[in-house]
Length: 111
Length: 114
Image 1: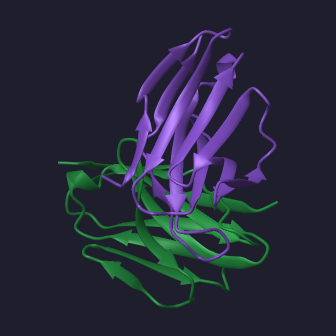
Image 2 (image 1 turned 180 degrees about the horizontal axis):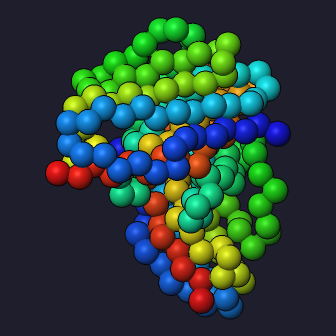
C-alpha cells in the first residue's frame, strides 16, 4: 500500500523565520510528488516535482525532490502570517492520476 | 477561484436523509474526482471519473453514490449516512487520467451527519 508521511504535524513560527517541511513516501512506480497549500478549504497547487535534485522555486517558497531518499522538502523563507495554512504533500504512483496524500503539516506564523 | 465550484458549502443532515453534493468545473477538464478529508486523517480518494466513465471506486460504501452526467459536472448522492461520515468532501478535476497532471480542487462541502 502506498504511503506518504509528512513532518512535523504542526509548527508555530514568527514572521521572518524560515521553515522546512518534510515529506517522505513509500510507493510503487513513483511518477510525481506534488505540494499543495490549504488555507481554508480548497487546496491550491504549489509545485510538482518529477526529477531528483532540481529545485522548484516560487517567490519565497522552494521545493526539491530526493528520489534516493524517497523524500521532498518544502522551504519557506521570510515567513509571513499569510503563509499560515496546512501544507499537503501528495504522491502520484502507478497508472492513472491517483494521488496518495500525506496527513499535512499545519503551519502557523505569528506576527 | 480555482475554476471548480462546489455546492452547498455546508450541509447538516440526519442519518435517514437523502442529499446530494454538486461539483462543476469550468476548466475544460476531462477527469473529475471526489475526495474525503476527515479530521486528523489524510485526504482519501473516493471516486474517479474520466470522460464521464467511473475508473476508480476506492472501496467506498454504497451509501455514497456518485454520478457524472458530463465531463463538467459531478454529483455525490448521500443516503443513510453515519456520523463518522462527517467530513469535508472535496471535488477536484484534471485534464485527464493517466498522465502526470495536477489537480484543481473546489472549496469543498463541510458535511455534518447527526
